[in-house]
Image 1 (cartoon, one colour):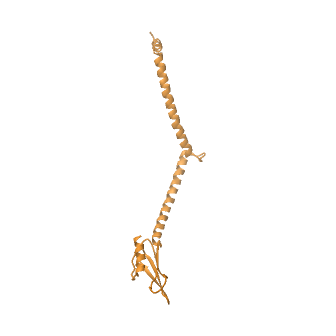
Image 2 (cartoon, helix red, strand yellow):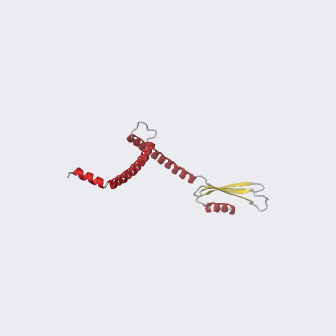
Image 3 (cartoon, one colour):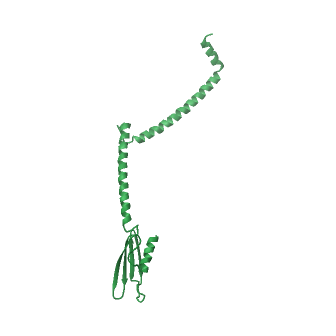
Length: 168
C-alpha cells in the first residue's frame, strides 16, 4: 500500500473529526485575528495622535523635537519656581496683618476718638501707630514691633491688639 491510500482511508474514516478540528482551528484563528486587529487599531490611533500635525516628519525627528520642547518647558518651570520662592520670601517681609482698636483714652471725654493700629508682617515685625485724642490736643505715637515685642511700654489697648495678632 502506498502512503496516499493510507491518508485517503484515514481521511474518509475520520472526516467528521477532521472537519470539526478544522472548524475549531478556524474559530481560534478568527478570534486571534480580531484580537490582533483591535490591538493594531489602538496602536494606529495612538500613532496618529502622536504624529498629528507633523506631516512629512519621521518619528525620530518628532521624538527629538518633543524632547527639546520638554527641556524648554523644564527650564521655564525652574524659572517659575525661582520666581515663586522670591515672591514667597518677599511676602514674608510685607505687611500681612492689620489690627486696630478704637477706644476712649480719657474717661471724662465722651467719644472713642483715640485708636491704635498695628501693621506687621508674617514674622510679627512692623509698627504700632497710636493716636491719643484729648480735648485740647492730639498726640500720635509710632512704636516699632520686632518679632511680636516692643522696647517701648505699651498701653493696655496696644497690648491687646498685639496679643490678638500674635495668637492668630
